[in-house]
Length: 89
Image: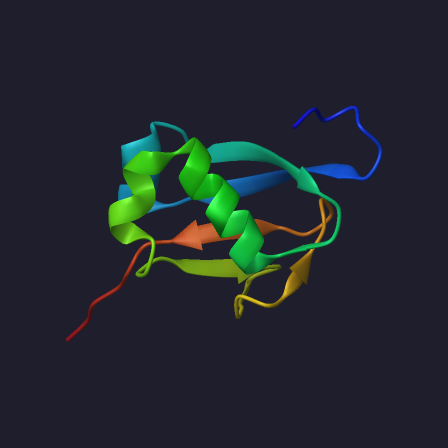
């Protein structure tokens, strides 16, 4: 997809901990159609960064500092972050 096509958004996604280490960057940019869902964005991220597939059912997506569900609509103005699975004791 080209970013200069009307209706496409460049979504910046921050990566944390093991996810950042696997990609080698703390922030990535994904070009997607405007007003997509978190599920769609995550699918596009996994296509571009297949090394994250082992965490695909485990990482959490945060939109504007709130953990979200997969059907949440996002835009390029939202702050998106992928958080690794967390365990505690």
